[in-house]
Image (cartoon, rainbow, N blue to C red; front, side):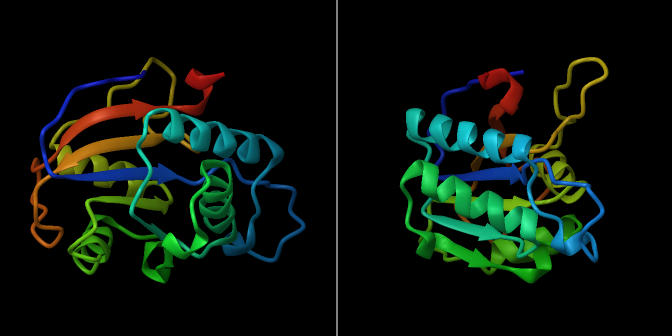
Length: 178
């Protein structure tokens, strides 16, 4: 479901779940799973969409797990962003809401549009915590499937993100962009 709401808030958060990973079993562990072909295509679609919408981040905070790393780097390449915008945060891998809130609190206070590239259930739980609402879903569809992006209007202080403090502006899933 593609949502769109205008905002006047000064900060924005983009929460991007990593692209679809490859489950072929040839890797040693979960951390080292790469993107599947479908995941790489979805990341390219999201990069194009972000450019078209003029929603490019000032800073990207990414899990260093291979699938998240490939998602962040692929997005930068497709959107024409410098890879220097990416800050690898090990805490994002398998993070809960509290950990993700800490990562945001430690973010550059001058950044006005921050992106987190991470994993479920943490990404989905972060959207629910910040908006104070469940994510709109279609029947039999995951709330935040791989490569889905939630765009939130945020309060002015990255360190004070209480439940319900943000508004969901846009939720886009890659299949909606095909």
